[in-house]
Length: 479
Ligand code: ADQ
Image 1 (cartoon, rainbow, N blue to C red):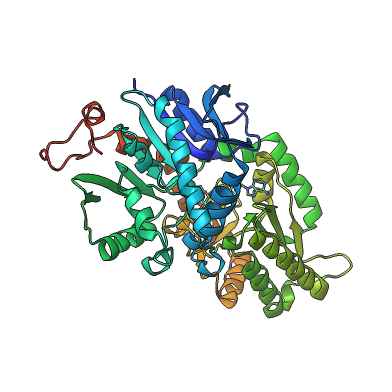
Image 2 (image 1 turned 180 degrees about the horizontal axis):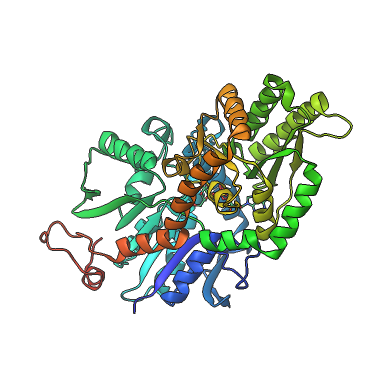
């Protein structure tokens, strides 16, 4: 059987069978790798004075991982630079924060070459390669240039930006064309697919037909593959011992108050400032809610090396301090703002204790917190999800209260509506959301993507219209 080779910037297979700090994505990919006896390849996170291309192979949690070190300059230009200071803000429509520096672009190309050169010898005949996320967009093309003809798929975890935004990237054309070297390109949402289609038509003059783009004599399949969570396992976790203890602890400390929860990586795309301000608006609009509700915001710091992250952290400290200063009483703090990471079973208990889940990113590929919040609820007494229309999850979760995160008044109203929602309506909405979260879980996502990648691809338009099998495809030279 052909192997599955998963490639991502960082590699994090679960270290044990339980649910520690590792998320559903890692669990799902690890399960796929065990099924297909595959390999997970990526950067070790370590740097070395001079790049050697040496691979360290290890077995972690039943999964074979292959790690390589990069140089410090690679970390600065490729990871902190092009990935986190150029592509991340750009793809989240924050051109004001995007740095367009040639050295970052050069570093990005160099590291993708390093990935390709190190990975290519590991790829055997019939292996299928699945590359993840914005750090590695040109990797498929780099592998093709080294003569790799295997099936190669790419999945983008973050949104694809609108054409006007994307074209602010000086090398937009090169980056977009490199995507056309894949056999399959997957997006989280229709919104992203439409934006990509728009760009491809307007800027590259290519047409997307029947879910594929024809380019240089070959066809690239393009589709929407919304990622999910390990829904059933997460629901079980929410009923487990640690979650239950966390739930009880929260209920005690709530002292009969309603609890609203937000859980996010501390990132400017997550709309945290807007969320705090909307909550403040609600306190101003509903004086009757004073002392009857509080917001627990858990925000784990990330990407500390990047200045925009230091700045947003400082602003959030200031806003939460201002709101608490203005509204707190001797026995009530309106915002509990916590910056540390939590175990997944603790998180499940916290979600379950919250009457409202507030998930209001300004832009998000999917947002797994929305799905985790739903999966953790008590079916007899579920909380209400308030969800930004700009999260990919909104395309699937229309029984949530969908809000515009840029409007503090709309968010304030939705929050008040959520807190007042009758039990029957909460149950009805939750049931429908939960059915979706269970059906479109992370295994379904993985299986749909891998099946589409292994399935028939009309790869070689020049030769004929016959569909190729994976093996036939692998034996053909396509570049
Ligand atoms: P992220 O931007 O990281 O992911 P998200 O989808 O919300 O966003 O996933 C965050 C994960 O981290 C969740 O599983 C959450 O439980 C966990 N987490 C957050 N804060 C935590 C804390 N304090 N302690 C413990 N765990 C915490 C990117 C894209 C998303 C896309 C995912 C998957 O930006 O749009 O949904 O990849 O494709």
